[in-house]
Length: 260
Figure 1: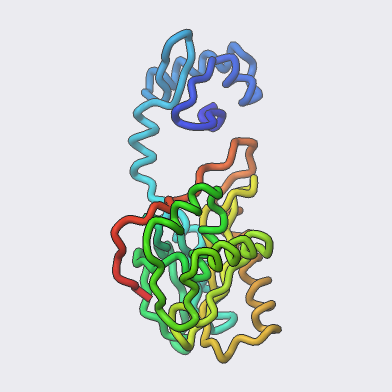
Figure 2: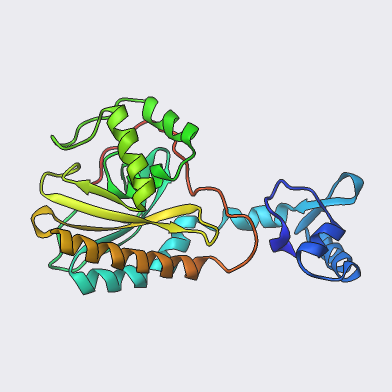
């Protein structure tokens, strides 16, 4: 019944919730009364209901980064071990990529990152995938909100060039950082998607630039796509609810120091 709400701000009648949950109207009404007593739903005007403070309180205790880490860490550990690389899961927060999880091997490419740290979105493979999934108006606001700083000679800082590359990322379904953060480092990333298609996070492989050829890049891409699907299946149940909004946001706040 609770899963039948499309959002926490939606007001819905008991009969409509029952219909969405495939329950008899009488049974649905009894369940709604119990949920109201528990504080899980709130009754409003004209006999409509929406999620109550109990659910809001519980949701504030669930951090999406923790969910991604718990669901995906074993997956990315296996991926890192299989290819001897560094693997990250990231979300978009304040115009930056926040690492939700990281896995590496003792012999993989060394990069000074950790879970919870941040890096620039516009020049990273993770960030490009996350930015490319934004609505056009949010993406444009991101690009125009502040100066794009060149971290290496390969960093894309011209707005028109970045727009074109992000359009290409949307079409290709993956993003690449080719020596844009460090002169000797390359990354490839793919989205982690809700079953209805909305991008909610991204997963990447980081390797020494000299070790990535076309064949290896394709191998990484296929492995990342499989891992992303595995993680998404662990997080999201197969249900008909609308996809959640993008994890995090693109608004660029005061820049944090680069962590990568």
